[in-house]
Length: 243
Image 1 (spheres, helix red, strand yellow):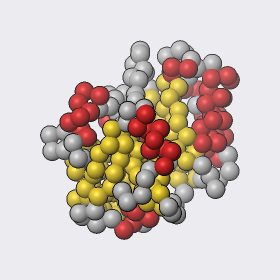
Image 2: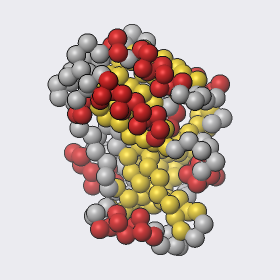
Image 3: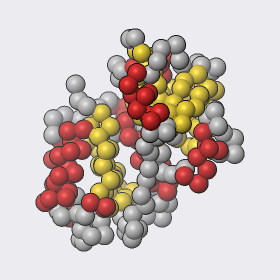
């Protein structure tokens, strides 16, 4: 990149983050507010080897102001045999969305791999309890793919009418999708009202959650304190901050 990566880049280097350059091979406008960018991996998947895992994300660098800024994106359909994958963008007004809107085949983008991880729940859950929104849809899909025989209940926050057309990899025989229109504490309220009846045993329940930071924090505290789920049975991450 023309500009240095600032203190974020320095810290990632000290933590032995590995850098890769991805090249755009195709672009698909999935809905008005959701865009898929296909890329070659610059050697990432071969380097990852057996550490490739569900919900895997990388830190992508997007130009903005005097220096680039990193944003985390989940690998969609990574294929080590061909060295390809995709990113999916829930479009808004940020740096990453501006890049995604203008991306064309041949464009390149840099990324750093450091910090990603996934601890498979042990014992395996009898039902996945998933809370997310369009920004975390790629990770939700990869989680559902990783547990192809496991029933799941998914609370999915929506914002636009077209969100009903988003590519959720659901099987109506196994997956219960509960859509919640975005607004205030609607998602948290719905989860608090409905999730307890699905938790017969806190020690064996498993919740995966990635939505806005405030909701994620509130629900994580609720799951741990009110429902007494052990720390290792709650996987939560705040994906974005409400403006």
